[in-house]
Length: 362
Image (cartoon, rainbow, N blue to C red; front, top):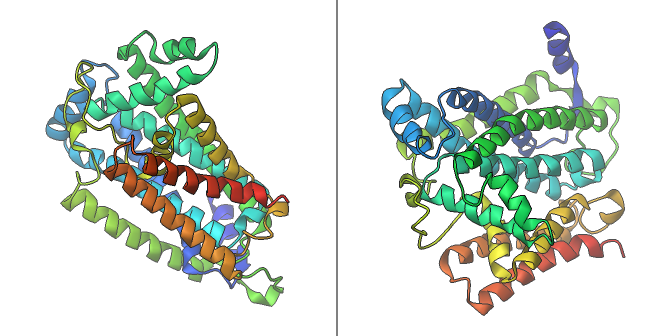
C-alpha cells in the first residue's frame, strides 16, 4: 500500500557515515525511470523496418510529432547520462569496499551487463550508418564460437544479412530487457536494505549513530539528482547532438563501410580491448574474462581492494586503473588498431585489471 511504503521510507534508518556520493544510486534510478518512460512512448511510434526505421526517427519524430524531438533527445542523451551515473556509482562502490556485500554487488554487475545489452540494441534501432555497422561488427563476434557460431549469427540476423527481420528481433529484445532490468533493480534494492549501507568506514555503529532516511537523506538525494538533471537538460536543450556520431545521421548503407567504426563513449574501454587483440576468438574470451572478474569481488578476495578509502595503496591502485581506462579509451580514438604499442598497452591495462582480482585469492 502507498501509505505503508511512505511510512517505510520515512522511518528507514541508515548510518550517519553516508557521504553525498551515496546519492549516485538515486541518480541511477532517476535515469532508469526517464529511459523507461521516454522509451515506452517512442516505441509506440517506431517501425522496425530497414525501409522506415531511419525516416521514422529523423522525419516523423523530429518534425511531425509534437515534442517528438524532445522525447528522442531525452532518450538518446539519457542513455549517456545513465552510464555516467552507473559508472560513478560503481566507482564509489569499489572506493568504499562495498563489493563485500556479495549479493548486492553481483546483482549490480548483472544489471550493468544487461544495461550494455539494452544500450547496444537501442543504438542499433536508429539504423543510421554507424548503427548498421555496429550490428554487423558486434553480432559477427558470435562466429568465433566453434561449430555453432555461423548458425547462431544466421539466427540472430534472421538471414545472411542485416534486414527487417534483424531489426524486429533487436526491437523485441530492446523492448523486453528493460522490464528485466527493472525487476533486477528492485531485487538489488531489496538485498541492499537487508544489509544496509555501511558508509565510508568499516565500523559497527550503535542505534544512536543511525538516522532516518527522511528528511535529510531524501532531500540530499533530490538535490544531487537535480544537479544531474540540470547538466542533463543542458545537453538536451542546447547541445543535443554532441554525444552522437556524425555517421549515424546518414541512412544505413550496407554497400558503404564507414572510415572508422566507433561505439559510444561509454563502450570505448571494451571496444579498445577487442581492438587490442587481433584474434577475434581470443578477444571475446578476454572480454568475458574481464566481465567475470567484476563478479569475483567476494569477501574473501577483498584484503587489498576493500575499503580503499582506508588503504592508501588500494586507493592509489583504483585511481591508477581509472586513469588507465581513460587513456585506453583515448588511444582507441586516436591510434590505428594495427599499432603494436597500442595493443600492448591495452592488453597490459586490462591484464592488470583482471589479474588484480584473481591474485587476491592467493
